[in-house]
Length: 37
Image 1 (cartoon, rainbow, N blue to C red):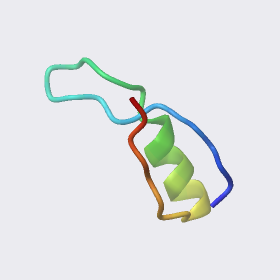
Image 2: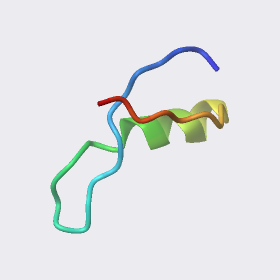
Image 3: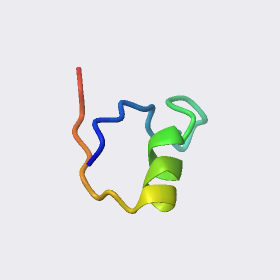
């Protein structure tokens, strides 16, 4: 992995992140995700 810290996916009600972590995965194929906080 590259140590990127990005926001997660949106929840079904529209709250939450902006999907940047998922977009990073689709671009790089780095499979590791860790929840912070």
